[in-house]
Image 1 (tube, helix red, strand yellow):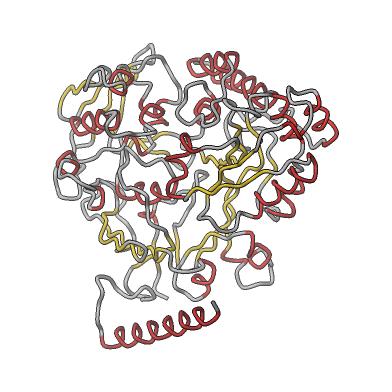
Image 2 (image 1 turned 180 degrees about the horizontal axis):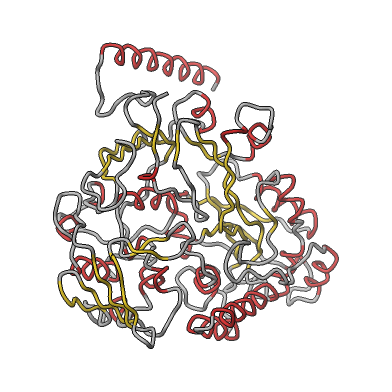
Length: 534
């Protein structure tokens, strides 16, 4: 292994020397050198997207690129409120169920074809086509009348969509819902070019979007380049291109060496970057994230179909110690589901505190009576079959020490995790959820309502469902949030999941980069970024 490591180092040095020679003589490889100060290039670390099809994507890695290449009727503003995008305005009927969108007439696909209302009709009906296999269509378009019929294969057109004219689209939803516009900011509702899609195969490897960037090149496992879209109807990008170094190395090391301009900071480096006397502190930005990390229980199967076992496993975890020692204070311990900063956040929620004695008593009072009678338990997590994450290792250790239960860890490849979790889940699963829009419905209903596609644990509680249904259509926001809070308390009391932590983003940004602003969902719109000569 050591010899192999030496060969890799020598090879890397030879490649670096060759690259320098080529730069000196002016050779090009489809883009300017990554370190060029005059090229208007933003250099970032990245990994390959699983897909660039907005209708199919359901994880953050793919969204990072899709958000730059495609667009929809509305987007979120700096205050996380829906604002015009391709729709310049809209009207809502008095009963809150009919939305009439008036589209801009200066919006073009990257190839120059004008975007019309029919393109949205096509895009949404395609997303709901059961043959597409979208895991997000029912969640984000399911409020539209007739979407359920298309998803079931009963019909091909959505009854609640009517093209009034080339630039007027009428959408009817099944009930007044305050969060409907926010749902349309998710990628599933983005517009795609039907001619691009109908070209066949993996058309999304050459996507014809409407966003501020077009896909310039994509070399798997090496490089992905976004180029400025000169036809963009909004703010033109301040850089000519964004170069993602795919799997380029350790991001923090790449940042230090000047290979990338921005990097996320992991717990291994947190003490270095938060040292006020160190070289990184002035370039550090900390942004609270509307995210929630938790252990999910498969409530359809033993042993977690027994609420006492779910409660016992929850009470056996010391979250404060986990956040302090493993997450190194970069997160906040979670005793509920809605993160701080989320509308409807309940400061008075009563969480499940760390209590090993009560946990053991709950197991004794369960249908199993003793830990020795529990069936084998496996937890599904993200990984490539190597070392498990430090936090999951600590959690498994606490279950072993506090309950005497041995939990096996099974890893599922990151690019497959969300797409296959429902069919490959074990007795438990470890995952995180980042808000797609700032509303309690995006957490409580999507993750825990009976029948929701993202209710991976199969949790079902008629009382919770009723509260969530009432909250979703309640026009009084204060009363609606109160209903959501009641539902959240029931979920916590019933140990529908094991909340662990709420996230924050720690980001290093080079001083010559401006406008790189992460929102609380963890995304930055890159057309607002500029890079000064350096």
